[in-house]
Image 1 (cartoon, helix red, strand yellow):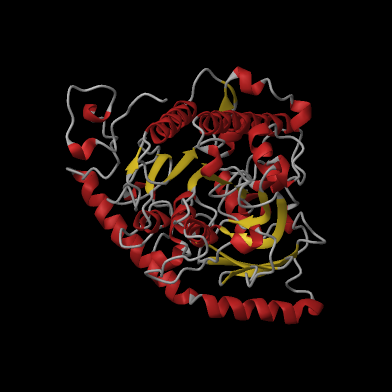
Image 2: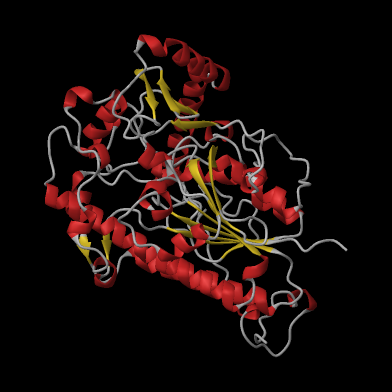
Length: 505
């Protein structure tokens, strides 16, 4: 008899960096649900995104490929429908794949392998969010006004969206439990918070005091210590000509942590439904994010940089029937998710892939086994703050950052976790720098990549400007509110059997 395939529940939250969470050493955040999952699960301590920006990172997570390989260069770049995702592969294996929440797909394909989306997306599907990436065109995002404009509100768009995401996910779990013939499922639940602006309810705000939150661990460095990439980000925010007070910084961070607790509350509701339905025993839960957030560290509030607060993401695998609780220190990244899901879905016998991926299954690491996982992480930026493509390689405790327009950066994270000392020009590091540069040259053709980015941008500008004039197509996803799939109807066709909602027994 074939063993029952596990269900998958993937939980994501925008801007939820690893360094903002207790399982990764943060002593400020109050996130009991995430902490509980971590205590019972496998915590990957050195998990990284492959691009510190929403759309490219999520495309990479779903495809197992670096964004440059699939043309998702920025937040306004199309994710091609021809790229297989973990949803495509899992559907081939008999899974029902559904999405509740944000995934930031740009282009006409708003499913990318999912059978259905339970909510609309929060962001547009067209090319309108394509950012400038040349010095002279940088826009003010996020501006320092975002830091100043924070505090308690009754509602926000983010609260409305995340509560709908939770409601739809919970209801879908009940639907799965009602249908005894339901195939195994993958349900991705993706929240927008704690994405700025840093505003939340009084109840969440009151969970913290300003004294508990405090100032960042590293303040804005002296200008002579700014690297060139950060210098452009400071200019975009206005930090080179404006400033915020310590009180404003603390309040913005207070808002962030309060929003993080709100997300944790939503996760608690989803996990409660999973348990109430009895699906928890057969469901593997994975908690992660598309990228982190600087929240004032080094005077930065944005993403699109390679510092640890932005790049490190949570990656927690809660599967007590499969893995004992443990911590894994090996470097991994989001491209590893696709092969990991396929490994788990097939009990170690994944199908042949339509195209090779950049990721590797994390199952051996989760089991505590010795593995061939390289531990070498690759990441990219081709958007705000760059005048040419920038790339990152993390190997062991060392992180190397390269851009043809800027001096290289090398950090020893074991001895310099705050990334305050650039070792790239130190003579004793020459051999290591050469090794990293060789890996960069082997992995990327940066001159060709720059050409491809520019060509893509010119095409998208032309298309977007055309549609701005009149009659734009609608690519945004609309939820299907088919009444024949809801509650009681006088009759139904045979094809509706698997969708009919009956009473939980």
